[in-house]
Image 1: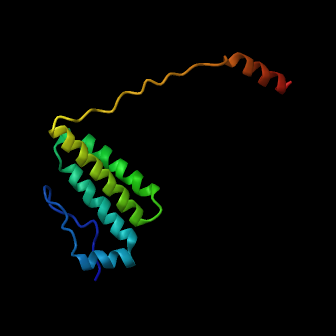
Image 2: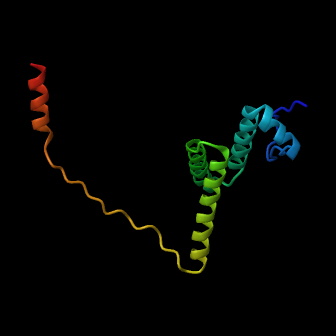
Image 3: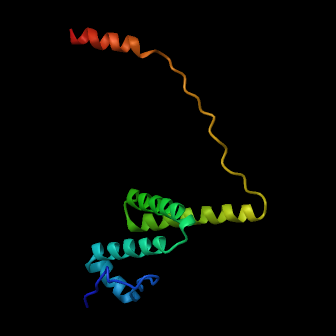
Length: 128
């Protein structure tokens, strides 16, 4: 059974998720096609979201994609994303109870130990 991944859908409608057996077959036999389907469906959801939410959704999807890329196995990616969701749910819970405190701003400072002029003088001396 062949499946057209990027089948055109009418504006305002989302691509229908294939049944679990088809998803399993794609995962085993055509992982690239499954990934293309995932990306297509995610982009459809973002595109059909209210304009005010799109930047946040795009940022979240970027973060998800980067975390997935950093993981060595699909299971590790699943566990990492699950942990991210639980963290967000805990933050929401605390916020609803009035206990949420945003992360403190970093008060890191940088101290210049030496100007670049001596380093440039050394570099010029080495060139001679």
